[in-house]
Image (cartoon, rainbow, N blue to C red; front, side, top):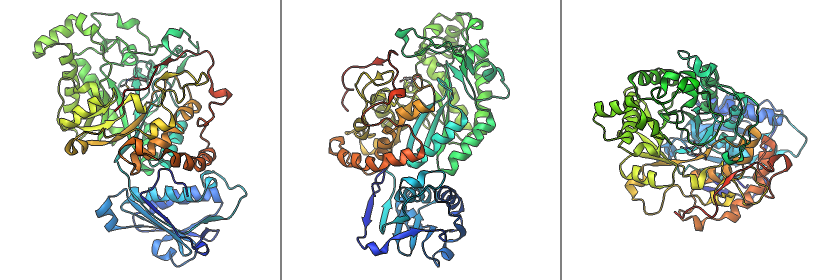
Length: 548
Ligand code: TNX
């Protein structure tokens, strides 16, 4: 049955006469409260099969043959949580039970995999009858945070592509979409009280092609942004698929696009910020926010609108890669350090982040930021995305902070997937499908109490070198399938003990599902011609990343 991610337990009954068959008269029945999941399943399966699937109560559906029922299981919920599910398929029907709605949704996703690749298409095509051999499945995720970061700042991804990406995540039982909405190269969220953020900040004249030293530019304007309604739509579409969208507004570094729109946000006593445009390079940028009261109020205003659109518990405020040169040179920043009694510029960054940490907490939300925010101390409710390896995450977890593990050496999917010359714009470490499969979110040696603070893990797709959805497909898949199994399935904790050969065998069945979904993944034999970027300079890191 070759499911990905692998379920906790699966038992195939060898009584072939017990086979279930989905037919034109099959019904989809749902318990009260499960109608939303039933609607999703009905719309996917109607599209793929051409059958209409009458809706009814679960109890009623069991009375007709070959029906699908969706119901809740209180005991499952008590024992294994809302995301747990069971499936029983036999000649009487397919019975899906969930600890809660998310569990039922994952059961529905699994059922779709059981129906074969054609179940992932948008219209029926000729083929065999829709049969599933008798089986029972029990399943529940290992981690509650099964995330993916999508950087829509470096390259804007149109709304339709984001919705498509959400469907891809849902098909792999991933449940957090971290949207990196602002950076030096583009501001992508409409903020009504500050229209220039998108009028000016969402557009750049050209882009760097490949890594800096290549000095190539495309001389093609780039840009785009999401209206608040677009984002509300994305949030609601994701929520239907049990995916939480976590917005990121990156502060106080990675802010040149905002400064280009509102020059008073920059260090005006050091640089002529009025002359700055939206950045057309990649890398770490010296133009960071100033630390005036006005800037604090400005971003409180931004965040008020962000909170209106995103109901997520966590709001990501970046905090990474903030060079301190301008603060060192700025009389205003130095006066601020004195006034606040801080030791230095690092103290200033930490004060800045803590301000918003408190501000979010007062509104019932929690701040999450890159591991740099640990420097200088954090409020207790704040969480950390550990990106510069495991160390930040370990320190944060030991200090009692929640952590999302996303070390760049392991799960940065902008990094190349193979060592060959053909890999497009080769950056970072070689992170093959197998390397990702052997990524372990909880480092050995972390005590049980600290380990409980590891909410889960996240794969990050930074898009300097991906300028459209086809490129994102290529870098994301198939590695995201391996990542999904790492965060969902009960794999051996020691990466060396993981059965990659079995995963690869199941991938042979998974590739046709991705084909049917229309995902342009990297084929095991390498990139296809249009997936190569001959001559475009990357920045490979030689050798393997440091061991755990
Ligand atoms: C580091 S991860 C960054 C990003 C880049 C990425 C490229 C992080 C917090 N900062 O701004 O896009 O490397 O791999």
